[in-house]
Amino acid sequence: MKHPITMPRWPAWLLLGLAAACAYPAVTETAPARSMEESYAAHGQEPGWSLSIASGWIDYRGNYGEKHIVVRAPEARTTFNGHRFETKRLIVDISHGRCNDGMSGKGFADQVLVIADGEKYRGCGGMPHPEWDM
Image 1 (cartoon, helix red, strand yellow):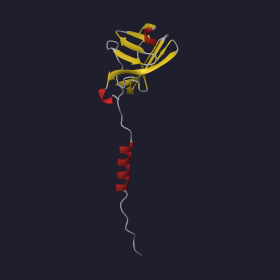
Image 2 (spheres, rainbow, N blue to C red; image 1 turned 60 degrees about the vertical axis):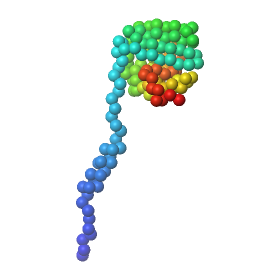
Image 3 (cartoon, rainbow, N blue to C red; image 1 turned 180 degrees about the horizontal axis):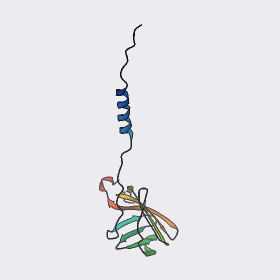
Image 4 (cartoon, one colour; image 1 turned 30 degrees about the vertical axis):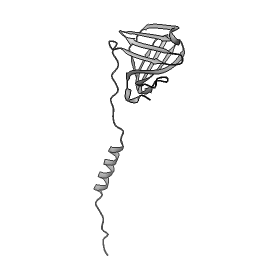
């Protein structure tokens, strides 16, 4: 009786291990929490609003300047993909990811959600990215 020719199994296991390693998602570092010494700016449209975080304060101007809220900035809470500032009157949710301004088409590093006295506003903030301009 003839013995069938077989290959060793270790090359298959090696290839399987390499394929699994390539399929595993890359590990990325989250951006460090912003210190209160840095300044941060965001804005949105319809109705127009702007927000700045600097020197330990959050300054929000909404509805084309009709609403003005200035509060002491709490410690930023790290979220899944950004940071969140929460006070009684303002919640500022900063998510790191491409954002294009609705009117100008200019690109920015962050998507920003502001909840001011219970009303939600969306816009862009952080570093400008001219390569994302539409």
